[in-house]
Length: 140
Image (cartoon, rainbow, N blue to C red; front, side, top):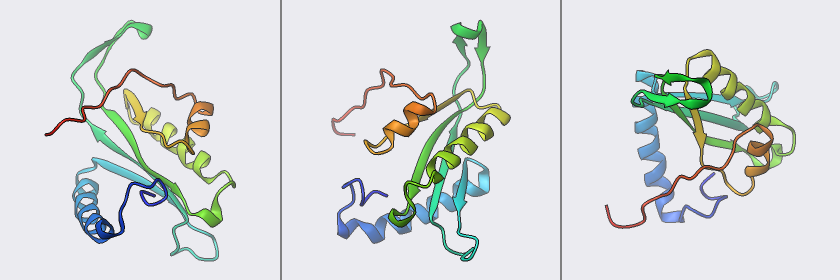
């Protein structure tokens, strides 16, 4: 996924895979990460698409449109990806519909994502909207 977006130099591939495996293992055990995968019926051990969410606690906040105080967690959608040979078949849409349904069923107060240029049309169709989020680029 990061290679397709041009964000992963070859020399960082192995370190990223190792770090991601360790982090996901920990998050899966605590329930902080939930993921879905798509496998072909004739190759059930081959993953051709996937999506996940990482849950993070937010402080209670007003929800003016609903006239209530929201207390649920925020879920950030991550790792939405479809292998090239499987694209344009609706897999990402079905995964995202499942993500949205899961979030609704599990009391998620807000669902957010960072869209790639290629994914933006799908997210627009699924009722995601741009926000005023900004990102700090200075040293941390």
